Length: 585
Image (cartoon, rainbow, N blue to C red):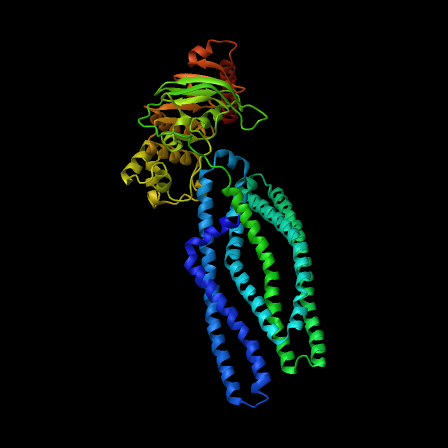
């Protein structure tokens, strides 16, 4: 872990070296004051050498002026080194997250990931700056003070340093407790962030269901976890600091008593005794600094461990020897495909299916049967348990994921739009496309006319997740995005199921235009929208229950498709009857 942490210093090694050099001179200047004090008390004052006394004061003032600028350099540029390292870690983490498989995000909440990218990296940044600086300054001061105190009185110095093992014992005892406590604090903070992210994102649902108190209770549960974790961490920290402070207080008592005895016996004179009392702070202060540094060290190390947990997550990787696919026609073949999200339950069992290039195939069936899973397996969002999926006769595991996904367009029921402009979201289909191409894609998606009614046209900001748009507008914007991408294979995952009938007609027109000339896989809830599909595949319990065109499937009186269709048709008739009665009531 230390080696990986040090690697982040490399881009900043010059500035880091200057920072350490400045810290070194700060330490050396700090050693001058007791030396001058001893000289004044032992020589200048008894001999009434006023000129030397004034010159010593001037030299000290000049050195302190230099130290002021050195401290500014260390505080400013030292922190900038930490910020640079933090930014690089954030970039590395973000890039790594982009490469993680779908399964990672299925099992990890967004708020917890964000907590690691913000709070944890901030603590690492502080450790990156203050850690080496504190260790260098404190180390030099401790060694230097030991050497200087020995020039005054070796026995007295050894007595003082005999207290060091007691300080080491206190540190070792409480360090592990602090580490464990601060780790729990990090976890509880991540829980709060996850709850906060979820609550803020769903604030409209909360208000609609008047569940503000429920959200407050969930947040307070996380808050209580945080308080409990903080209580344990502060308890460990308080024991550490109080114990270590007691040891440093013992230093002062020992020097006062032992120094007095040495003065009484004539082993040292009054000037040496006075200088020793002043100089011992050269040792106590860096020791105190190191004690205070332990809290920062625990925060930083805990944060870096959590950073590495994400960085060590295995990323998506192309199979050895995988090559890009070009000139995709769109033939898709499932050969005895089996898949499970976890070991406890299979989602697909022995699915075999052939889709010819340019065909429109619909997947229907009860919820949870595996329809969406089939759609997710084609772009290799998940790895198969067994079997194979082929595109134009090539196993998708032998195709680079980037080239595979570049040839697949997906329109889902839950449209995700990025915070930006209309144009930005359409351009997501093919960054770098011209304005003319963007407008053409919008026209084909039946949203260009609406965009032109907006004051800023294509530059209109849509708000977070498209909050300023209706469901139909969001869907058409996502369709425009796919038009611009122009994929060979199209997947429509219940793209119109959440829309009203009028909006659905507009969207369906855009989708029909989008499907032309492409291999299309449609997951449909409303069976009336897929009657004209070339093939309808009924998925139930992870298996293909029935397969064929609409007319053929309807001939099977005991077939699942016919039952689903008749059930839905009766529900639709009932809804229409109710609407008619209400309209004439």
